Image (cartoon, rainbow, N blue to C red; front, side, top):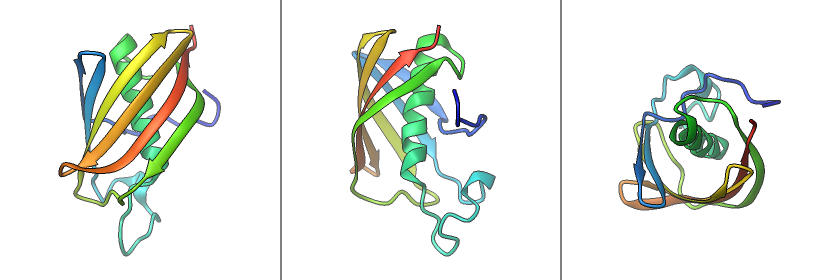
Amino acid sequence: MSGRRLPLSAVDTVEAVEGGFVGRKKVVGDDPYLSGHFPSLTVYPGVFLIEGVQQMLELQLDGVLGGVELVAIDSARFSLPVLAGDEVVFDTQVSGTRLRLSTTTTCTVGGRRCARIAASWRCAA
């Protein structure tokens, strides 16, 4: 997992659903990893949404963080900013095998889409 620093807590809850999972993350403005991200308006970086997908996938597959590597971001579209105080809902569909997993995630805040992320992953072991 080169370049990845844990423990960034990018997930509060995750539950399995048919074909994937639904996860949630409440964005808290005073979290230390947000320091310096637009100090007058705390915007949750899009890369943290991608990290959230990865952590939820890891928890669903193995119950622990680590062990899943990002292979490619096939597409990522960020349509609304996620701000301090928002709760992000990650609705993720998963397909493939542990050697090559594909996810398609729609992130929403208050029922409005803020991002859509399609990515490929592999399990390390």
